[in-house]
Length: 466
Image 1: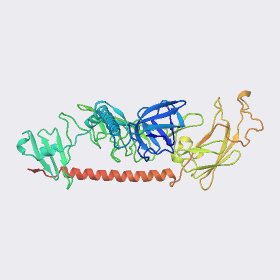
Image 2 (image 1 turned 180 degrees about the vertical axis):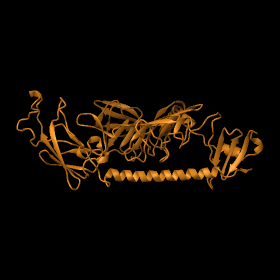
Image 3 (image 1 turned 45 degrees about the horizontal axis):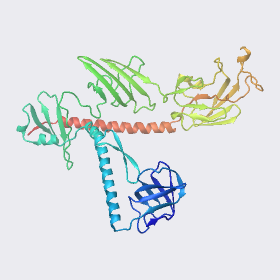
Image 4 (image 1 turned 90 degrees about the vertical axis):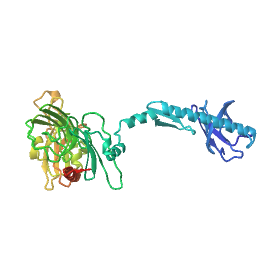
């Protein structure tokens, strides 16, 4: 029997066959795997074997198509169901799939890294090999119940240098020289948990230890505890570092102690990063300047940034994180109104209350415009820009523009911008977000400190000898 209903389309290099008006699954007798399909390409019928039948309108070939064809004719040789030839075809197909499955399993279990497996429908999936998964598992901490069984087993089975002790709901082994402690905590209905400590001297770093190398918790600079730093750093007169989180590298040799930390102030509204170094009883802290706390001014130089707004000639503008919510409108030629602010930033870094504006310069570092400003009663700032000439300069550097005299109102030069450092209100988007973050982080730190105090009280409780 031959099946030829509908047309099909193929793409060279793809094993997928798309059908139009076909009934690959619903015709009687059905089309099955292992059957031969002839696909017309030009004046030639190219033979293929069917690998799987996905739907009435989709087949998967055992090998990619050799040519691209659109709505071409085809013919499938169909065996009669329940006869010897159909049984033989089914057995051949089953054997082929069994061999493919074994080959795929061999690839998955013997190769390293990731392996690619082709599914029966032609889809290729990427899997971690067995060896890769075993390697990943071997790098994890081993949580095992074997230690608990050791803890709770007969005291005679434990080496005499160890003493079996329990405090409240904690049970563990303590060496006579107090070099190691292996502990597990039992909670009602949850069973036991344990960490399998490596069989060598040293310290395991756990969450909350904050460092690599030697253990120097509490040494001079510990920026990981809220308001714990009161050391005066001679380099920049920082009297207190804010609470934050980060990483510490430490070293100790005899009485010499040294550490280096990099962290960000979790409770700081500035979002600054710090590099902190400490040696014995002397410390130094450096603020790291990034695109969070600096901007590039109109001359291309990096400057300290708090709320800053960049204004372009047509009145378009950009804000940074701290000035989000401010709005700029071009109200006339050379006039730009900044709303949603409380005047200029009070910090003296950009000129204080009488400054806070950076204007563009020419190649000879001469100002291209004059600028004037007025702070309105509601805190809005009206910035006015005027043409600026340099009559004492050589002709090529005088900044003469046809139709404009010196001090005539003029827009910001094309392709340039001015930067205005502003003061944002307490209810600005950034200030509200920072207050919420600080309150959340402070609450989390207080909760952490309370847990530490409770654990310390539990550890100081009288021991119960079994």
